[in-house]
Image (cartoon, rainbow, N blue to C red; front, side):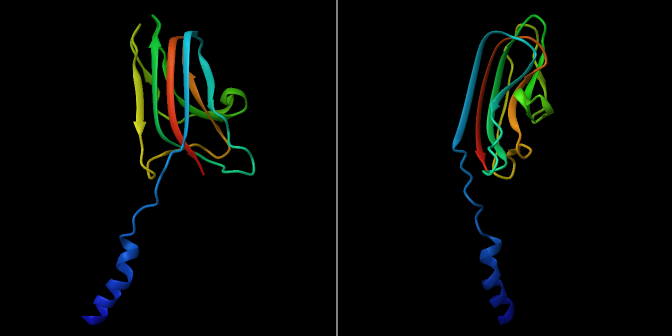
Amino acid sequence: MKRLLLLLALFAPAAFAQQAQFTCSNAQSLTLTGTTAAGSLQLIAAPAFGGPANIFICSYTIQVTQTATPATFYLSSGTGTNCGTGNAPLTAPATGSASSSPSIGGVFTSDGAIKVPANNAVCLTLGGTMAASSVNIRYILQ
């Protein structure tokens, strides 16, 4: 019994250690007014080579004002101009109704942050014409 208590005393602190602090020190905002055509717009540049390779998104909000024809919108990643190469969704696409202003977003812990593929940029992808858009992202480079 004494041996069991000794083992628990030695290994229990490691089992209950607190998770490392997760501080998202970078922020990016984009507001588009007027009509914006379908396509992708870069929000966060790909990390520079030799530095941290990954972007982790801690929180985001996207709000768009739909035209008479609703269209999808989401965060995506890719390389090249406006994520033109290898463009892939990071969030599920959302669609509003005609002339509405839907929004999507999320806040994540370190375990649930959206990990952008290494050396990729983050973009806003619009599946159609929008009357206006607003995006806010908090992220960290690691």
